[in-house]
Image (tube, rainbow, N blue to C red):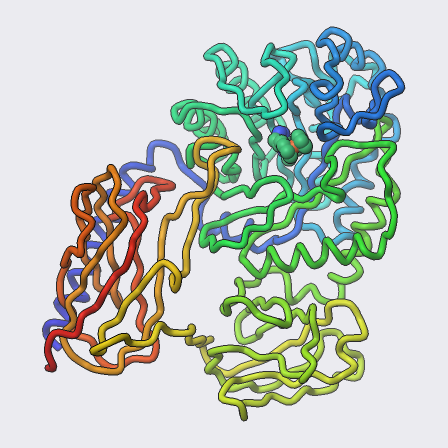
Length: 568
Ligand code: H79
């Protein structure tokens, strides 16, 4: 007991030390508070808008339809000379652009935030910048600041407002290159920083800034992020500022990750994949299927803890494409009935489920039934809580569904009628704090426990050095069962490489340091532990704390073995 108290005390003491050191590294410039981050994470569904000079072309240049790239990048796709492209500004007059109607559409869709392109790769500023005359106020007959117009409409309706900002700029002189992975010159860095200050000072509170593309150095990424936070510390910065300087991780375009992320993240989605900016000649058909596709993608993202930001690409005259408005309203109709299951929820506490997806809020599980099972059982593997009641969300008859645990696993029994409509949600109310026992790695020979990459939950980090940098592994976690109490020796072996790495191995709350270096792949003994019988012990491996933002493991572990050495 005394040992446990001492251990608890030591852990608390270390935690204070570590927090103090992290704070010291991060206090130079304030970042969004935990409350702001939680509010941002609870929103789940937002509107993205790609609107600019390219919207006038709609994917057509000199009578030819271009499909080699997204239509917002037609300047690059059609090799339009910079001066000729710039002339488009003199005709840009989107008199059908109605910011209040756009905000209303987002509200009808159940969207909780809006992000508009302030400047795409073409370099045309949709706001009144003092940095270049190539902007909507000085260069177009429209003469009004589009960013200001939408920021004000959002403020009137209490809709969080954010801006997209590409750090590359073809008008400034970056060569149009379809990879959009350009380094950023010092002069361009200063230009961007000045524009970022304008965006942060002239438009009220900005909920998030959506950096995109480019290949800045780490110092440049930090310069951009610090510039934003120096003015608006509560503005969340997207990970595409790169080099792990963002406040949330941004997935690739139209990417839904199949790996685990336990930090705030967002998935950007275009309605059609082919384009974000308006494309006049696109085949827009089967509205119902499109609506269902995006509801399913939203649910997949939310069940993994992310936010889904779905794009519209208005025409050059500012009007919203009717098909796109209908897709959004269709998602809104489904959300009106099922809103409880989406907003403010926590991610799915189960690994893959055959019937679909789950979210959690307080003492409610929400089961999104994409594939109604033939035997009617909605199985909840490892779920320990008592099920108080279950029903279909929005069922006017309020029929109760029966829980069942006769097959050694809790389940809700779905009626055969459940599959008749698209993606019904079954609410499962339970008693107590949620408790899900994960499938455990069973003990191996002589009660030893062998943990390998195949049985690990693997946590990834994205938004490292640029768009084409792969996600990196930042944490591995195992759940295992202990049947034999006793003392266990902890051994780590790994694939050799050129590295020296200090890792934290957290075993049931106790942290061991594993000092790995490239010459010797182990097994290296890192300590011993007393283990009591348990159905669900966890072991987590992460870079030794305090770690840098975005730190990854940098080493491929081969196995962690817990060798039973003696009985107590
Ligand atoms: O603003 C939208 C895109 O214009 C921007 N990000 C979203 C939000 C973006 N700029 N560059 N990239 C994304 C890089 C993507 C390049 C590719 Fe492709 C997408 C390569 C392959 C798929 C473009 C489209 C080239 C071929 C198809």
